[in-house]
Amino acid sequence: MPLYHRSLDFDALWRDYPPAPDYFDTTYRRSRDALRPAQEQRFQQQIERAWQIPFYQRLWAKAGIQRGDIRGLDDLTRLPTFSVHDMRESIARNPPWGDLIGLDPQRDDPIPLVFQTSGGTTGLPRVMMYAPQDREVMNINTARRMYMQGVRPFDLVQVALATGLPNAGFLMRESLWKYTGAVPIISGPGNQTSTRRQVELMKGWGVHFFAALGSYLRHVAAVARDELKFDVRELKLKGLLSWLGVDDRKSLEELWGADVFDNYGTNELGTVCCDCKYKTGMHVFEDSFIVEIADPETLETKREGERGTLIVTALFKHVAPMIRFNTNDVLSFVSGECPCGSTHRRLSQLFGRADNMVKIRGVNVFPEAVGACVAEFGQSNGEYVCVVDQTSASGREEMTIMVEAADLSVAKADLAAALSARLHDALGVSFRVDVVGRGELSRFTGIDEVMKVRRLIDRRRH
Ligand SMILES: [Zn+2]
Image (cartoon, rainbow, N blue to C red; front, side, top):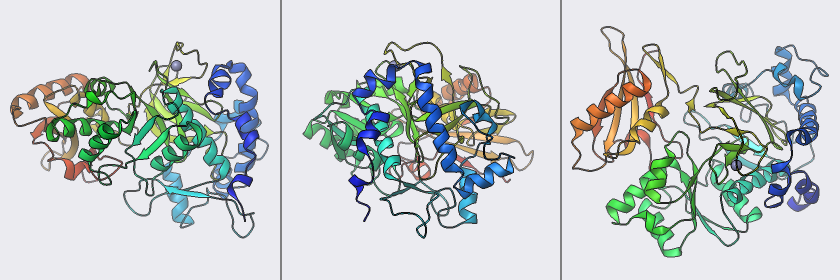
């Protein structure tokens, strides 16, 4: 029987991947040269492991890569990238898990496994399994994140993330519980604990941190104000642990009267990078990941400050190694040093999804960038959805931005005109803007129901 605590040499693991607070006195400040040998060694192990896995055998053979070709990190960019599209194809070819997982119950020794999925919208969701080492490193990184953002033992951390198939809610619980000494209170999203109730719990229990997506933070503050006549700033939270995406940090911090901290990660990788208390960009956990920014189309390496798609190589995985995983998320490297003294590279806030980008009359538009403009207007509650149509007569593409008004007193036509001008200014295209009443968009966006809020409806014929 593969007992969990015997499945891993924890002392060795913690030497390699120091949990907080040790991490901040060691790896976090180590010079880039001193960091490199560990990265090289871990990368070699990942390459060796990947050669055992049919997914990589096929992907790399197709690119003409042979065993022995990749001798170190200097050869990294010779390897092809892959994305969720390749993972979906692998699942279609080898249902139900695909051939990236790299486990064979017939041949391999049993190991304790965690099973989670992506938030799939059509068909079966993408499955990811985690061996003990995979899971523990993800726990350690996520806990480092929370420590970096001020979480300390005995703090109450209320987490409004789902604990179903998706990974994030469970990952938060495991990380808080095992590696921070803080107390996880997993309230779940709005369909598990109603938004009103979330506020009542925070207030009644004196919660210290609230963890939620940026869009949900805005929603909770509005519900508290309108339904409970309560200003969430009175909660005096120590901080908000968020997944901002492209959401506007400043307006959220004003709403809550507290710091809003960002982080970035995926189901396959866990937490990749996060803000420190200075919020100068998200520090990458470079003992666990190698990150690249590349042109979304040509995949050529981008320079510091230039936007591109984020490509991540994980250095710690046993099940489903991730080597040059193209996330399709558009970010950039941030230049300069951070006052916190970390040597690790920093990534900007997310600009948008490369594959969610819509070309409207020749201009690339991220729905998320539309959202950032909407958030600037106090007469809106920040809820929006972009609808793309093709007018039948001319074939001209039109994007309509539907926006919710903050309350009944808002003059809808005035807001629509002002927002339309702002969008044209910021994005260089004209859009139609429709202002609707509060709550009218939830049937499109699913904000009260799901983890991933829908912001784009594409009605064009392809
Ligand atoms: Zn810093």
